[in-house]
Length: 204
Image (cartoon, one colour):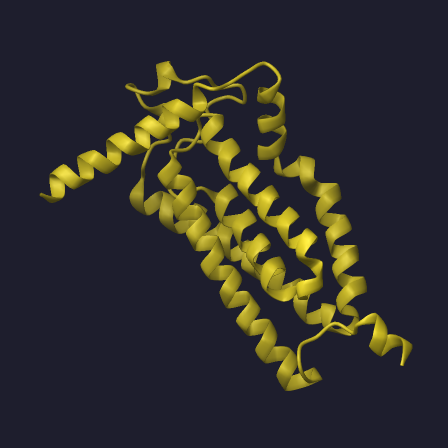
């Protein structure tokens, strides 16, 4: 029974990979390659730091290190713990799937479970969704859309199975919730209730 279930999940994993990777086009390839390149987002990360420092002001001293720690832990746990432990080859490095895949950004590293890209962006997006006030719905939506694009790009490029990405995203979400809980405790203990001053309060 377990073997049959495992085979079904494995076939679904492979099928979704081939279906998404098979939809490659000449105009979509560079977009997905760009989405997967962490260095390409560096200016965006720097802008995000500036915006968060402005919004959270004195509380940014607690928020920014917690964001850094959450994303850093996501990367560390996925790359140093899960990948060596499970030692699962990326599809681009397997004999059965590798020749069938379109690899516009190359085969990537050897090991794939979990996806560090997915873990990192999910941790950051989760923290932004939890800690930004409700009026920043558009910003939260952009964070989720960006994280989704990065995750999808890993499968589209043929360097991760969907399960690699799903596992990484779940790890990132868990660390995001943990980071938000730590931030809430730190701020409540040292600086009062968690909130960003509203324009009305600033004017008063």
